Image (cartoon, rainbow, N blue to C red; front, side):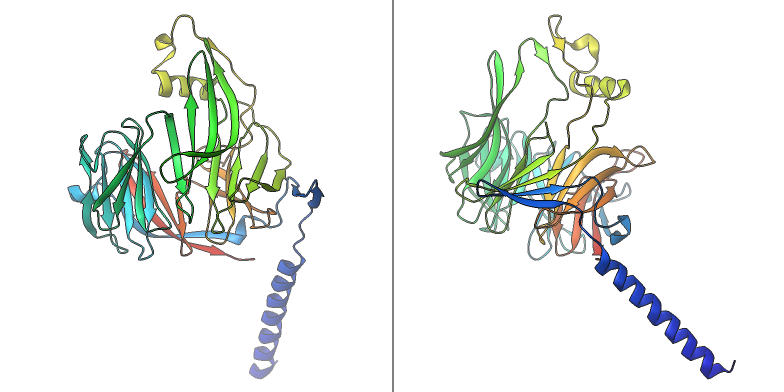
Length: 376
């Protein structure tokens, strides 16, 4: 066989491989079912996704907070991240009660806020987001306030949440309305997810449930999770079952996303860990407290949304290392497309990049950015 023939053979072989790969991707078949029930679209997903893990990959681009860094690059307790359209990174340090701002390249630019009770000062910040109006929104749970800053760090205003306890994860839509959860406490503890206007005046209730009744304690009681889409639709789920709901901005149910799954048992080690983390050990529990242990974990634990409308749902299934968790990924229609392992909770998906908070072996926290690739 001469060289020309060899080259032609190689080209034909490579072309065939490309065609086979392309054909394989086109042949990927979703084996679920879509119905309509009383005007609501119901997407019923099987246990198996359309694609394997190979359709998703991450490549680390940036790490802020290495042990040898200067003080302005270190975190006492990084709790949340937001990223603006210039890819500046805003990291909330919930122990230091301030926000460190870094450039796209990881250079420290400024620090916003400080601990205190004055205008723009914080006592126990828990989360931050950049709103559609390009403002920084910080949820200060102990002060029971929402703080608003410009992206340059100028304090704008505070909104009181004094009548609500445990106000959590406020997210704002294009009209300035806010979706958030909170607790109603007493002999019974009731959890509610509501939509409010910009001054936290209630617009409507999305979900309400009784989660605890004294003296009974369920350390693994399910918590609600939610996101707001670009169209201001609300995606939410309460993981006592594997169902996600899509509401329009007025609260009308548009779609249900269901997935068949196998419940995962709670181990004794997990029980011990959560008691130690929450109460500092069994000895610190009240003498009249009665623990209610579920046999299995909830259907899921967390959800997030990327710019393409993909929904990422963290399950309780662990990877071989015992630390990585698997995430179920649904496309914007609600179809189960992939099951991927992630070693850290995804906090921000922006411009095909993922931002997380991770810890090294010594316990130093780092903000990391990864390039995201999809192949389907």
